[in-house]
Image (cartoon, rainbow, N blue to C red; front, top):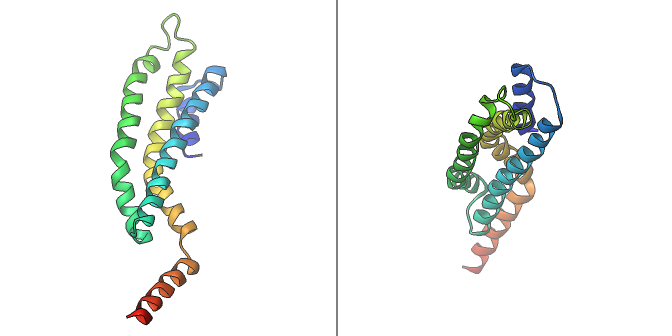
Length: 145
């Protein structure tokens, strides 16, 4: 959904229509955005297994994965700019709508994934069950000492 926002907005603002090449762009875009979200969540889970608290794992995981996510979006975006701008040239009728959708979606998904995914992760992973587990561990450590 975060990638869809940018793709739809760029189609709307450029005056294009949703065509087969634009749909192919959406499919590519969904793969990139999903991979970025999976990278973040996987890193959060790994950090929690290493012993970080939920909030620390989100903070450190987001900072750890910021560079790879930004580099993926930047390299993809830079490669697609000539295709998006050359839409009126012969032979670019298919490439241009696809490139525009991917560029718009990359922009919004990269920005929104940086904020929305950590918030959703904290909301889903947070709650009384985890706090209770931390209290139980603390109680067990006290009784052993």
